[in-house]
Length: 136
Image 1 (cartoon, one colour):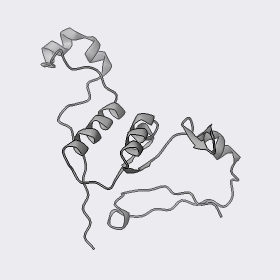
Image 2: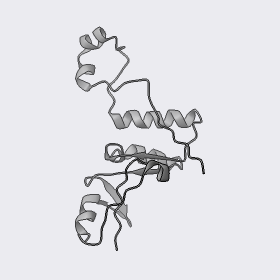
Image 3: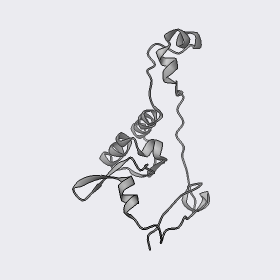
Image 4: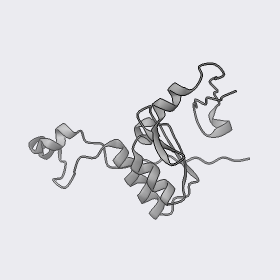
């Protein structure tokens, strides 16, 4: 079985807010006045959208909690029938039945026993490192 992996790279760089707020510094660095501050998750969503429009083939998107906590990415992927695996932090909210509940409160309610960490390598699942918790 042959595996193909893609990693999106943007030619635009993450410019810190302090730089964007300092227009003299931006001018000296050659950063156009049209460049606005974007968080990394905002940049990631824009890259995913542009890749989709350009017809870049992909089955699913992965990301750590920096991206998983940015609800707009998950919502866009769901609205566009794209699969994803995103970590979320305890402060994130998910739907449980008909109400939203914080991931942190769900984790606190689970027993400490019966969990383990599983790891795999790139050849097997296309990820370098994965944390999976299973309940007995």
